[in-house]
Image (cartoon, rainbow, N blue to C red; front, side, top):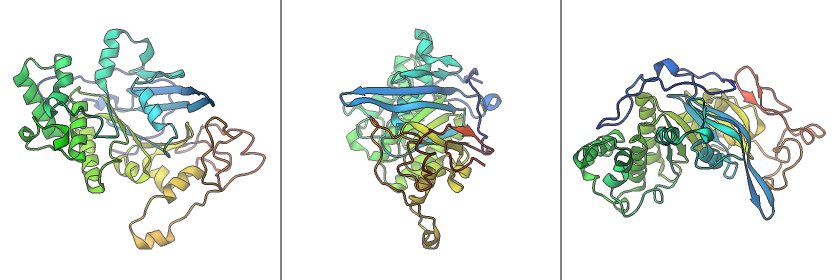
Length: 361
């Protein structure tokens, strides 16, 4: 897989390329999306989310455009509280945008019929951050993973449901699967629970998986193992990922052949192919994020660029500064320019960039 180019298409049309049968082992065959790899299956178009609070309106997401393509990874990165999870919830139709549209195969999710919405729910699956809270403690692994299969009548009886569940567990490397079918969440580790959550998502034969900080609560070794599993599922099944993380090291590892969108206070400030954004960050905020990543090599750590921000304080969302929201913290701040006009997210040769003082080339 090669680095994807940055696309600026105004819409995200496209039919599902090839629907494999929902049999005892749900999932699409490898190569099923070969003819439509560049056609977005899920798109966010100018989405905004404003929350009303006693202290005033909070613009959690302020006009975001994102595209998720089959078999590709789009990582959304940024500090805690920047709007990543709110964006993910709107993408999954768990929250309705204040304005803007979410489109699935080119169709506005808000305008879908009941049957279309049901298909959307099956095709776009969500993996939550906390494996300790996302699973029902009184349901076994079999009950949890097979619930969707039984609800949508994708299996005929209990015997077929258990066989399908066992196959899904093997796919996420919980083996021998028969040892896990009748376990409860409290009988498993955090990594095992998160693999159960992945198996539950895969049961619906999804086209898109939205993973919201799905590895942040796991130990490092378990985190890498789970990322490898998700990577194999992406490649083998052609599943597109909207991967939410605050850790650029995780983003670089999982989306090395994909794309990164850097978010700050509800806006995308830089977006492009992962390797270019991480290896050659342009926006001052992206540079600060990259400089904060721990470097295990002591020689590289000594020579690594350290970005010192003007302030460690994040602006209050109810009283955002004029101009570029990052200017109170930006080490490249230019008075009279950065504090008067908000920079637009503009295309450059290899990325999108929103900054007055640096260009996207």
